[in-house]
Length: 472
Ligand code: NAD
Image (cartoon, rainbow, N blue to C red; front, side, top):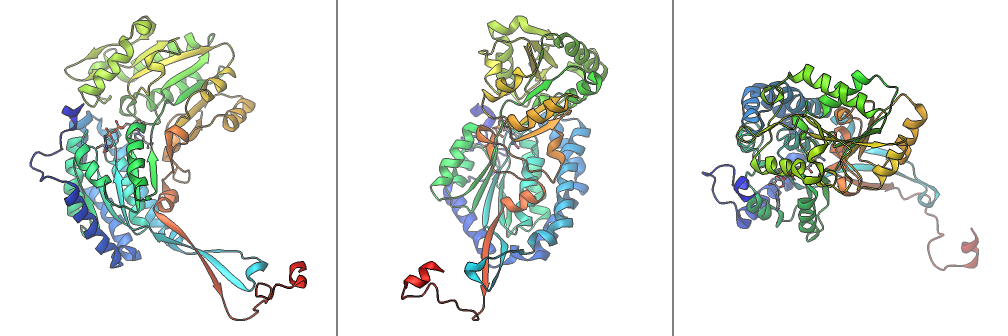
């Protein structure tokens, strides 16, 4: 594990708690000067992010290819495209978002008026993960800037080429008096976490999420934790199986080879329907990736040898090695694992008790599709849950009874592209949310402001507290 967590650049100067303290002090000075609060500054920085993504598309695509063999289409659409989409939304809506929101008042303060003022929090820390190393870094930065904060971004050292490109581009395009990138791994992040921040926004696994929250608690710093979990896909019968299958494949292997927080972790379907579903998956996988998917240029590789070993351990467990019905090929040297389907794995297997975060897809079977609801709810709340069905009542029951960060019916993963929906987890899958206006809100304090004049000064609350006043 430590091998892969070396600092991104060996030339980088030591970044310790003292350096972190100096950096926060510098940015706090900049924030206090009022620089980041101005509407013009926010718009200028958002436009600069857009320009940076446009002008350096090739550099970013190349870095993602080095770190993950990410196919160009996935890099351009799911990383850069999504970042530009968030810039576009923020630039279009920012005027409305920053406007104080008038709200009603009651008799108790009559006459008065009230409004909710969104104020920036101050200096915020964003720690991001390796799987979408551009999107997960820049998307929260967009929210922090839109809300008028100074920002430190710590990209993931597990995607070192992308971390390095981000550091260079942010320094070139953005206002370095208020927006900085710190590259590095555990020591650098630990140094950053020891500082007092006004918000910490963390994307990654729940183990580190706990470390982040404990560090934040020391300073009463609020956190957003964007974590993961095992996202279930329930497949009912009587559906358009080909469309369902293609969507599942696109959201699983076609999204960073399953290394996606909202990817399909496992499928639940009925015993009767499972063979049809498996056949359809096989057929469509072959259509997309050919007979030798290990050689396909359209599938990302596994990010590093640790994650490769973690994934192979999941399929090599004794009790499940005979459950593979498709795929299972792997190549240690190129860090590739082919799309792999398993049927009827035991509930107590490793693969059913850890987030898979890779190209393995177990299918659990039940007698009646309704049994899937209890099965899902008996496990920690997932970041996302999916259902394919034509049954209206089943849809309603799924939405009302399954607890998850988000739900998509008849597709997977795509709810995260809808900027009017909050994106975040519940329970073990996270705390807080972002995207669109929710990003602006995540980095704002909602300040309650009440305005009164000097007229109509009711004497009710002034002593002497007579019996008559009590009855009014
Ligand atoms: P990772 O290894 O890149 O770690 C995330 C960040 O934590 C990195 O910046 C890393 O430097 C830092 N870190 C690691 N160990 C640390 C420590 N001991 N102290 C302080 N900081 C430390 O990413 P990961 O955790 O492997 O990411 C995968 C997980 O993230 C999965 O569970 C996935 O579901 C989840 N995820 C969630 C979202 C979301 O939006 N909810 C998005 C992507 C990934």
